[in-house]
Image 1 (tube, helix red, strand yellow):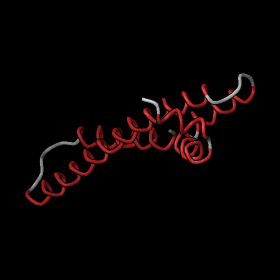
Image 2: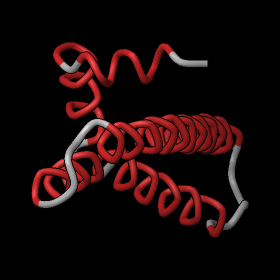
Image 3: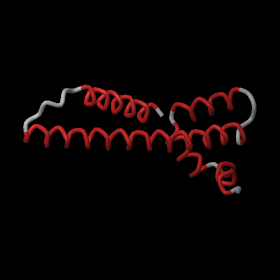
Length: 107
């Protein structure tokens, strides 16, 4: 979660800086600026997609942490792990936790 939000923040900052620049370019500068703007826009879209995917995985991770653990310290630790390390937490749960596997198979 930390990586995708940091990536999104940097992409938004670059996008905003690029939008503020003046547009008095020569022919070669305009091609370079257009390519730069296209790359910045592409990286912003990719960052947004990763954040949305990670939010969906975070929802399932918290759901698994609340359903497949006992109340108390164990549940607290699992929820913290699910929030801080979403992708590794889900990967390890899906590989080794039978309760998580059965929860994801439900429709």
